[in-house]
Length: 149
Image 1 (tube, rainbow, N blue to C red):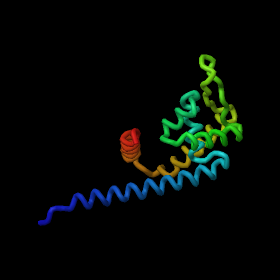
Image 2 (spheres, rainbow, N blue to C red):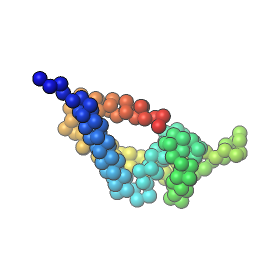
Image 3 (cartoon, helix red, strand yellow):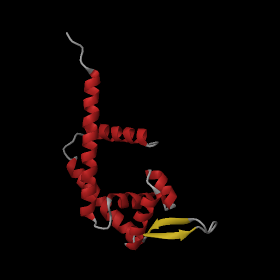
């Protein structure tokens, strides 16, 4: 009896994962655009991080998400124009500007977060709890291994 080709099986699985994650990212961008016209997926991610961290510098955002500083600058400028982010000068070092969600930014973020959780909840409603737990652990493991990229 022939030995199964594990290399081909592994390559096929990796290809499927890549294809499905790409599809997931496309859907996430499209969903974000429908939820709030001024809050792209990148903007949502940056605003969410600012909210979770209680504010941070633009350079911290760039480092956290492995984005070019000019990309972060454009996204932050758009969030500021939309009235969703404000800057605060650090009292101890006037050269440092901390970005913070405005009350309007925090409210929109909360609304979009509730909507996103509802969508995920609906998509995963018929999944057994064991599958959800395993899937969550796999995503955490994958993202942890990709943090240094």
